[in-house]
Length: 96
Ligand SMILES: [Zn+2]
Image (cartoon, rainbow, N blue to C red):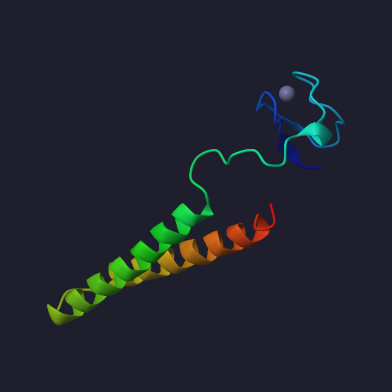
């Protein structure tokens, strides 16, 4: 069982129900070419890349100045995970 968001009223309901219990919208009629709400995967690809590149620059400047680079490493890791996550997301919605 999964929880889905109604395409019409955006309320959440269980996917076992054939229609939205709030507004009676049929999920089969959901528009497939709806404009994405909020930031799309491309924005996150860019943010992840910026975080990884920024973290790399931070790492080298921390090493060069003798500071602890642990946080910079975490930022590189976060950026890479973010980037890969956005790539997967992008691939999943690629054929719209
Ligand atoms: Zn609804």
